Image (cartoon, rainbow, N blue to C red; front, side):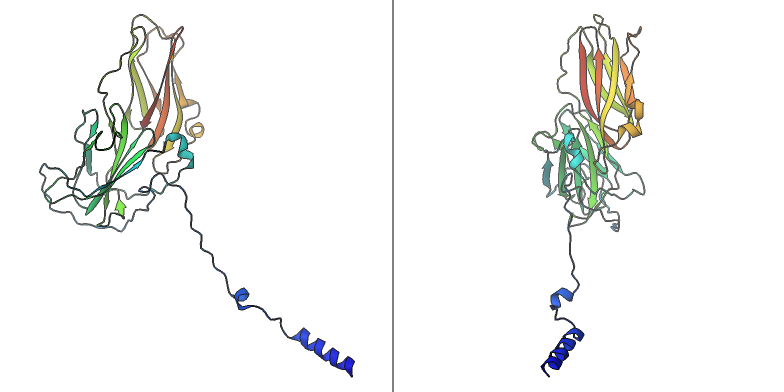
Length: 305
């Protein structure tokens, strides 16, 4: 009899399902938030494409912009740290070219960003130098009957604007909160002149300068002296960063052997310029080398192409 009872208990325990906790049966959900480092807090936003504003009737008169703007500096970022930086910088293609320019082109330590038309409640202004540092001005309010402009001086930017430097400035139109912005204006590149021309050795080349005469082309020029002849000139691109993603470009794949331009050895006619093709929409760093018999002049430049 005892054996039969044990057999029945064993049979029942095999038929019934095991007792499980309710939490282990419920589906689990996990939320992951990606926090990749951004070039600056202001460039990591995704711009809305649904903004729609009708043009205002602001009169075109001279005046200064009264703005409750806030400054933001990202001066700790340099080109050597670009490979650790990612950013979302999508923008809306403009339906037409809108005016954005520097209204004080010959001043050495001041940039005067000016844009038209005045069609947004607020604006954001960004300027990046060739060291990879960014100055951002948020929540720019343009009062009625005033022209959208925001002068930037060396004093007002705490030394960010300096003579002899190159900057790429962008203006964005934003909603009233200043958070949803679009970019219908094409960025401008501003090259500030030197306050004082640096002296040079009269035995060698003087007034060495590199500019971008056309998109995707850097050209370096200098003035030769009669005492020393150049043996060779070399212009080489060693780093480029895409201005939309701030990621390094593979120059070996894009340019190949054309990353370097060299003059003939011991040229009969002394060269006074050299150029090199570079990727467009990029911040590039080039190295210019002027070789003499017992001397070499090497200059590094950052340019926006």
